[in-house]
Image (cartoon, rainbow, N blue to C red; front, side, top):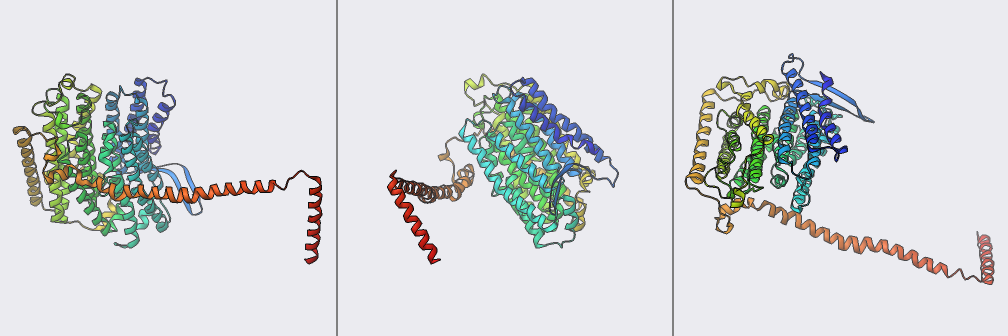
Length: 637
């Protein structure tokens, strides 16, 4: 079974290379076949491994595969090897499964784009690096995948590179991720210094020798978390993700909703042993996640770009995942990550279908009444909206309820803030839904004449994701509802050591859990009704005149002016400093040193040239004088 492991990342890599080398000679049909087929092969192989793990004997919780010895120098040794355990297998299913659906969707969405072949090359390359990230058995291989997905993100955000704003968004994402990546690589270096290895198995086995609250473990986990903050768009490094919506919509669905931005969640879950040994870092993770979830949710309320609303929703949902991880509920964080991959990919692809049908219009103020024009998109988008709002029995209900239950058991304050963020989610998502699909169509007459449902290559992935958004939560049905939480049982070997270190968690009794469940569902329905009253009954449409907004609304609409603050505090001072270095250090110092050296050599050569007179008598005189000087100096020595 281990022999299959190496073919999983190899398939999309071969797809990338094949399309790249035969770029111009392949028709779009063949490009679609090879790109989608490569990811589908990876999905089939991942499924085989997943079900083998699911049915494996109790003692066999992982498969390993070593391709070759990678680096050996001194006491440092690392191999190019893969680890497929329940955690990585779950991630592989999401990456290849959702990735395949998005590849199929992209065939229709990008078919008329001049960069069709290049787009699928980048998508295949991204899948390859993402698989490296989650399958690697050591920190170095994970870091290669980590940087690789960052590179692909940069390429895909700036895919339409003729637009300078898109290039700026790509550079912003790349640079802000590098800030986080610096923390990650420092954490990996500190791991090697502390444990003498960067292999997961060695590190986690030796970690048990450290006491809970160890200072060195705290520093390691904080540095790793800095990397997660950048990659998973948490405060303060979150502003790149909304701007990343400049890329094609399938990119937003794959990279910035379902896979890449969840890499930080995966990384912390993978290092659960280290984080359990550092309660202080777990508190930091909880606070950052909670602040991000609430902060981003408030911003999403006032956004009018359909993709920007979903972008801030993604930031908020990632915050809830980190809350779960910070509470030590690692399975819960992975559970919400999986359900979020289903419904957020569905929502982004649904938004792409709307944009496709509306002739590239993204402003929800210019939409409305699309229900009759886009029936399949309408139904599937409704499923995604119900799922993210947490309405039972949709997927988001089970995972979000589990996060809030853990929060309530840990702290009533954490629960209250998490519940507010969850309720805001239901409001802004149904605001988006009603403004897009209900009421009268507000588009121009020209756009109205071209509104159409998307082709089957786009609608079939929407329907599959809608089904997953409906049934996906049943992998984690809690005991209070008569379930056994299959996902928790599947992932338990990965988190067994952490559970042993942390000891028994306080669990809510069934009556309390049912009351909390009923309370949050009831309040969610109230928020939906409020959104319905405002945007359907009253037919309220957000104004395009910013000056007419109230102070609070204007503050949220402008995203709390965080980008402006960063521009003032960070960007402008750096530009000023660069100008100072350019004018003082570069031009006055370095240029003068370089130019002065040239001038000195030129002057010296001109001066020495005067000695070469061409007069024989002068040369004889010079020789005689030289001989006399040598003789005199020798007599003194």
